[in-house]
Image (cartoon, rainbow, N blue to C red; front, side, top):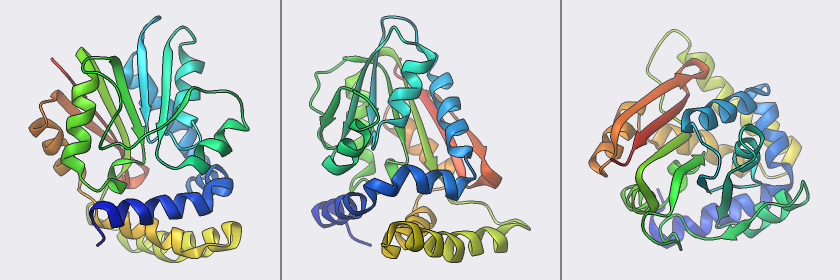
Length: 229
């Protein structure tokens, strides 16, 4: 597996190539369920009027838009390190997009009331550093919510999950986007990522309290949360 700067360049290249079809593929791969997951992730933040939210790894801005839909009177910073994803998102309406790396977040300590990410954490080159940066920019009492794929536990559905991830998704992704490699990366990075329990433990090690998670989509997706006390 690639690490460090090589991984960052590889990931940025993939998302640059598929930016135009990214949202459409999310809808197709999940049967539209990704919209519900994002809605649940934002509700978990319990944002209040006047609070500040960082959507880190915002992509085309779906989570930021959902946050503003649920609570219009908040301030949102939508940050990503792939310019083409943000340019694609900008076509859907104005958001305060910011080009930044999750390992070097350009905000002062104790800035945000909430930090949220969607399908970011398995792509970062240094997970512990990314968590440390999110902890740093949160205010005391602030909340982190992570929506991410998770390595599923073995069960009776495992063969069908494997077929969907390794056959259906690459075939569909290659047909729609013309870049099949990106949709081989998706299942591979998901299977090589942490289990939900392991990610929760890393969040606790980073200093987060009241850490928990909820499994979705037959245990292949998880919403994690934790607070900076």
